[in-house]
Picture: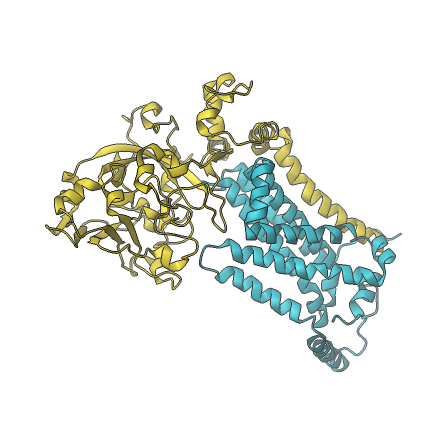
Amino acid sequence: MKRPSFSAIQIIAHVGAWLPLIILLWDASQNQLGVNPIQDMTLRSGKTALVLLLLSLAATPAAMLGFRKALKIRRALGLYAFGYALIHLFIYVGLDYGFDLHLLWLELTEKRYVIAGFTAWLLMVPLVLTSTRGWQRRLGRRWKTLHRLAYISGIAATVHFVWLVKSDVRTPLAFAGILLLLLSARLPTIRKRLTLRRRLGAQYSKPCQKEGESEIEPGVQLANSQTVP
Amino acid sequence: MLTRGVWRDHTAFFSGSLIPFLAVVHPPVSRLGEQLTPFVMDRLYNSVVQPPSMSKGAKMTLPKIASSQITPKHIYQTRRRFLKTAGLAASAAFLAACGVPTQTQSPRPTAPSTAAPDIARSDELGNQANSYQEITHYNNFYEFTTDKEKVAELAASFATEPWKIEVGGLVENPMTFDLDALRRLGREERVTRLRCVEAWSMVIPWEGFPLNRLLKQVAPLSSAKFVRFQSIYDPDRLPGQKSPWYEWPYIEGLRLDEAMHDLSFMATGLYGEALPPQNGAPVRLVVPWKYGFKNLKSIVRIDLVTEAPTSLWMAAAPKEYGFYANVNPEVSHPRWSQRSERRIGELKRRQTLPFNGYGEQVASLYQGMDLQKNF
């Protein structure tokens, strides 16, 4: 068996995904979380989760454009996104609401942004549980279908953000715009064009691109080469 | 290699989510965790939010001893301000260790040394006032920025002298008050609770004078039913006013009887000092039974009018912000729960009280009104 090796992009992804948490814990230990520390922790963990989720959703379009290495970090980004979402949820439930189930239930049934956020998190749970190769094999084609829940999760998470802000919705709408772009890349017509452009480009520049090599795991590649409706 | 790759992703992910869990839940892992655990554990056993008066332990029906009774006072206070104290101690130690001169970061840097002890800085329910640092570094003042923690810095150079407040409309004696005239209206201390619509709150030792003293001088006509307040409009000095999201200037309003109520207050000072610009210098409104956004800052104009004025927030989001904006745990807001609140500096949420705890004094103003509709 080969020794585990990290490619540059993997190192960047793993280090980059850990950084926000390290900075958060450092700031907490240095009292740099401001006057309302719990809110600051909630906002920061939530934003990181959303950014990572969008990045994982960007992996496939990036691969369509020729940056196939992005597929190597897609799963890691998705898992990290869930990790931060879990921290975000834990801060909200445990620190903010002190596990007060009564108040939390009222929040969940009344506040639309809570419903959207919780939905986004909940949809990620089956994806995390089936993110191993074993499950990929066992589910076969259905794995791909199941993992399209990530799109809905991304939409719910962005809606959660849009509904959260008071009035100036520029930042959340920027996130929504990026998400829309990433999801539209999955539309068959756009997908075909992107892939075609890349293939044509590849013919002229790199005729012997080592596309089929073990850059991508078989399951992922299989799933990825199918057309997304 | 493939197996390893999968293994790596999951290891990184699981440690990524477990380590912060440990850091927060397991005491020895971090200072923060050490301070947070008692609160978290406490909440596990005590899932119903106790009203503030109950948490003092005096009238408890449950056979539970309040933490204030079994915990030495200095530790209790440390918990109240745990992040500040822990953080200050940590940063002081860090700076000292590195040979960097320690910054003087007293919680109340400019509070006078002759300040009365904490007992004088408590509200009538016995809640300790927030620190000067907290009050002056967590401000909703959108004229500068929407970032509450950046207002102090941006407002530091905002000059509030000279200043004029024009008071007119339906009055017998329209008047213009300069800073001297405002000073002549008196200066008394009021320690009141401020409940922001964003579900956080503070206890603040304001100084100033009751609004009715100013209104009596201008003598409202009998046709005057409402008071319309206007903040300064000066986009060159107030960068936030270039934002197209709001209709500047900041407008707020009160019904005349609300404005004449003794609790309606014009603040010109804080902790015995002149009001800092980030808190609305030179003069701001304080209506403690209403949400914080009613308390407009840096007032330049007051008019007595016949119709209820449309406030900036009513114009921005009419479904979310009404004219009355009385603190009401029963009226929901799409984003923030109004049932509970976080007192800045505390970890536990508090139950929000109707009229922010001033019901005895002000509930009669709204007799016969449907406060669900008139929110």
